[in-house]
Amino acid sequence: MELELQTTAGDSVTPTAIIPRLPLWIKVITLTSCTLSILGSALIIGTFFAWKDIRTASRRLLVILSFTDFWTAVALFYGVYTDFMDSTVDCIVQSIVSTFMGTSSFFWTVSIAIYLYITIVKTDTQLAGSLTKNFHVVSWGVPLVVVGCAAGLQKLGYDKSQVSVGWCWVKLTTPDNLLWMLLTGKLWEILAYFILPALYIAMKRHIYAQMRQSSALITYSGT
Image (cartoon, rainbow, N blue to C red; front, side, top):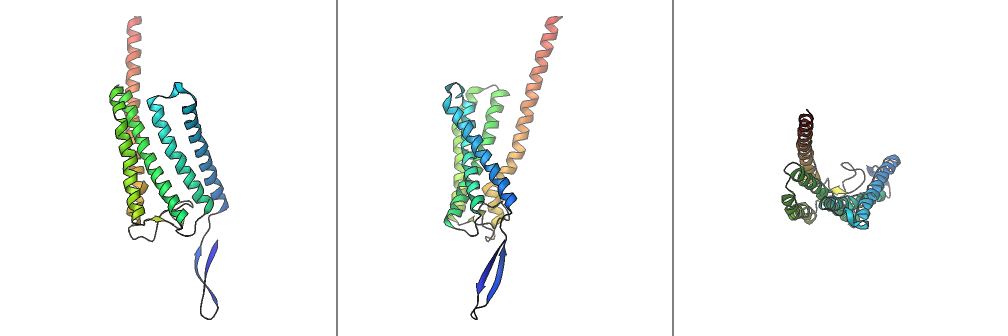
């Protein structure tokens, strides 16, 4: 815990604010989680470039997602390790990188789900492949616009670790901080929570129906 002190005219020292530091156990757990994310993402990216046989379209999308996760974890690791106490330059840069990559990660996760849905349920690999360019435009473009506006309006920076685990995100001093928290991550995260299960259930039902149909055909042909 750190105590911010202010010197008055009479040379007396008066405490003005108490700014809590992150507990060590929280830092250790968070840094460990970030490290595992970095290693896992690096492994996926490394294997993609190491073996040509696995360089499929779906795996390419997974590599892009891993790229965003890698830099998100790196930025969050730096933020937690540094344990910022003010909106310094590196705090703002960390917020920009983690917010952009984190938001992009949600878009790429949904994009992969849509790609798999079209490939599995609609069985239209050509359509799925043609959507790749759109995935790039949306998954990079929307986060770029949102984070660019947030950074330009000076909404990103030190959040006193009240809405994060040590890293910088949206400044709590801004009156519309809740709006920017939604735009820079939470809104897309909530939407993903609805879209992803819906697509998963649709694919699961389709696969189950295909299995039942195949089983019925085998049973019929055997009689």
